[in-house]
Image (cartoon, rainbow over all chains, first blue to last red; front, side, top):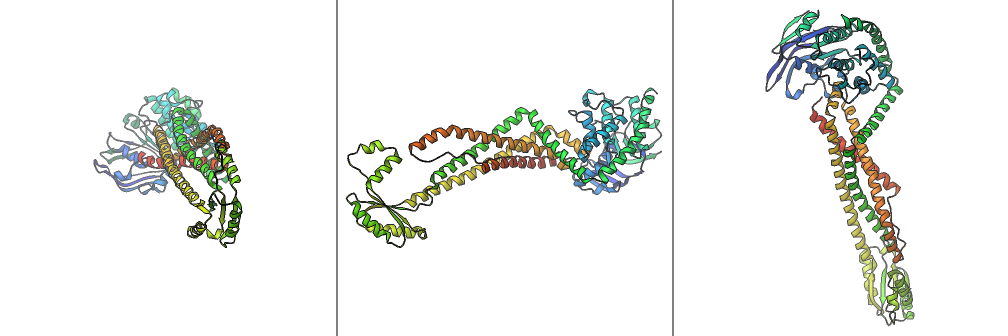
Length: 224
Length: 341
């Protein structure tokens, strides 16, 4: 589903941020990506999400996602590849002037689904993350955990092949974190690959999943 | 744990939902009923059209100010255009006139004038000759000049007999006509020969200059419309920057992102065009009465021309088009600057 093959990434002014990183995630696999801050976790996330500006860095090696070669992708293909991913952000990236329903519906609106289809899928996704009945609320009236779950609902509403989450439990207390982790396990069971970027070692160690550890841009551990 | 029991039943249901959703995806996307897609596409455009209108209404002051500035610019161009059109209408019946007026000496009698006219008529390059008697000339002058009373106060009719000579159309070229005029001047009865075409030509050239100015002014004001719309859209883009980034991160194409802004540009241009039409029409209505009074004094059949149907449609189309173009240019530039791929 997702393969990094000898990926090297260099910013001219900083130097190498990823060195010879190789790993492979199967379908329905769940993995954590950990490491201290500055180890290259965010860069890796941004590479998969195609958020890196190619002109500002040099990339070597190959990144493959669902038969797309992400290292050679053209700008106009990016939207369509992103539709096969569900991105979850630490800062949620919600539209605060839109209702919960509209936020979750966004990927489906973009893809041109009919209103009935959108309505059905959004309700199903909200149901799944435990936000049923909050469709008409605005994100800022909800708690941090609930806002994070809006972001998760938006990421899964489209049935992505890969869920890519950046510190999804960063702002949550341990109980809520555990709850969200259980959600991810549910997605895995439904056939989705999940990659969670986190520095929350206590959370990671409690769960029995594969752990990729980055240190100064190098993959130093791949366990589980 | 407490919340576990709370959520577990839902998860069970949700696995079923995932299966169900997979099936619907196949019918709606891969199987792809074309009319379904078309409907969704139409909904998407309708939504962008009306939500952009909604935002325009919501950002009241900003939008109203822009539209006022634009409609004044557009009405300036339109007003100048109408002015030239009206002046041109005034001279349109003169356009074909290349008549030669021969003013005869005061002592020439009507009989010898008619004799001279018949002689000229024989010239192969002359189409018609008309004799205007002193009385006719006076009547005409009274009617058209508005100085009737002053003329009647005179003891003696000061106007000469005039022969109106219209050359044949084949004689269009100035050189030939001028030779003809020179020939007429040789006749002893002719005091003064005037080629009307010359001043008609001068007037026509003046109108040409005015028309070219309309084109230049129109171009300049169109540019202004383009830039003002662009700037307004740039502000809107800036305030909705986060939204654009988020939409792109969940798979929006550039055309999806730019669509609402193009519609905003359309509405701004459209409303500016409509209000410019109202401005021009109101100004013409105000001018209508004085102009028609003046025209009555000259006993002329002149009527003020307003914006016609075709001109109105063109005005609104061009304004809306300029709005769309202005926002398109800005959106292209800004999307590049935002640096979200």
